[in-house]
Image (cartoon, rainbow over all chains, first blue to last red; front, side, top):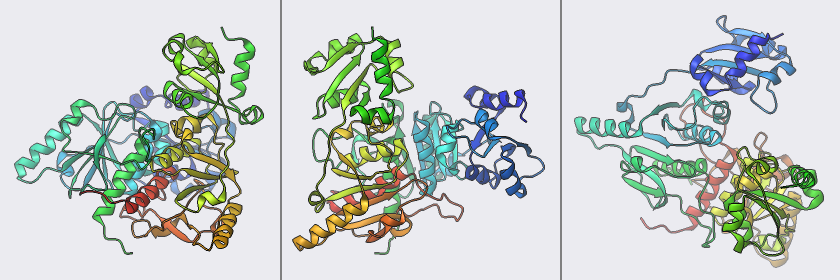
Amino acid sequence: MLSHNTISFIKALHLKKKRNEHGLFLAEGDKLVRELLNSDFVVKQIYAHADWLRQYSKLLSRDIETNGATPAEMERISTLVTAPSVLAVVEIPEVTIDAEELLSGYTLVLDGIRDPGNMGTMIRTADWFGIRNIIASDDCVENWSPKVVQASMGSLTRVRIVNANLAEVFKDVAEISTQKNIDAPAVYGTFMDGHSIYGETFAPSGFIVVGNEANGIRTETEKFIDRRIAVPSFAGNENGPESLNAAVATALVLGELRRQQTKFAD
Amino acid sequence: MLSHNTISFIKALHLKKKRNEHGLFLAEGDKLVRELLNSDFVVKQIYAHADWLRQYSKLLSRDIETNGATPAEMERISTLVTAPSVLAVVEIPEVTIDAEELLSGYTLVLDGIRDPGNMGTMIRTADWFGIRNIIASDDCVENWSPKVVQASMGSLTRVRIVNANLAEVFKDVAEISTQKNIDAPAVYGTFMDGHSIYGETFAPSGFIVVGNEANGIRTETEKFIDRRIAVPSFAGNENGPESLNAAVATALVLGELRRQQTKFAD
């Protein structure tokens, strides 16, 4: 049986403040927890149905505190509507990305993404399209919030995300490029009035900047954008939709980028 | 002040059963409600802050029952975490689509989509890409659930959605095509092992079938699929993500379809 203190401790980790204080986050559900156990993440505690513990005992090293929990107990500690068979308490990793690592390939830059479902879906989509680095402005929804972790579907274990001051990142990258006497990666930003991604020829390396769901890319970030791009609408009437969902728009940009970079068999 | 009965009535409409019984659904938020008022939808009642009612009095015909509501009252009747300034009670429209209307252009077909956020995002994305008709299997999440309505961002006013037995729709369309001696629209289905959409040449007219988030397209539907397609992964490692979010995958297919059908300036 889980103690009152244990239950309080896990419930505290539902809150951002407590996650930051303890440096821990929660991951729920069989598939996600097994992905974390097979990754470089440090799983500190496991709470699970007895069945789950039996089935996956081989995944659980001695360093992991393991606790059997009844369905009723899982319901109390879970953040989900339907309680999972397993919940893990995991260390928030220290992730750093040097500006130098951003000189080649593509980086996704999130400027004030507020919806955790969008954030998680963007991480999952970036992973699908082989984007290894994500830079999120400091006011983005927290990477380790349960809804982000859930929507990322384990992609958090493969994609690196750091919070940073975007202006500083762009300045650092520009400076290093100058020092090395190479072209700086192109900075693409999505705007309603941007140039169609389908008519754009993407540079060999760059940043894809995506703005806040309601307000788009903020003015301070806009200064660093080289190319304003957009997913064109085919609604064919003036009263069509005003915008796409931010995660959908991001996926369409990344898909077109990769399509252009790849030779496909007919 | 709203009566207890009024509040109970609106809260009942949070539930699918009561929505079906009354033939009414809820729409919340300034932008969405104004789109509905400017559409063919029949708005029956409006509950709103006094400010909103003053500002938009011209939109409100005599047939609409209009009620001032305090922020505290809006909080009681709203389905949202943050109560909106306006909530509308709207008639569920009678939508029918003849098989004949599906012979040209593209139709989106949803086979067991369960997540309301995905469903709403798919409707919004279809609207963006000029898809006018959506056929949803009977076990899809209800089109008029508050979360679907919210995520669709008003696209419900422009896209037609009907629930139907998918097998019957495909049979009807095939039969009419034979009668008319024309090629039936191609039926594309998204599968993990499908042919890359980027190497596919899409037919002039067709159906894009998207399956359930966890289980994909069901076997009975699969029989009608002519071409198995997929969004290829660029993760570049075997331990990459297993799948894309269903709404994201749908968007990528629709985007590539429209890209192929359009000539873009460089």
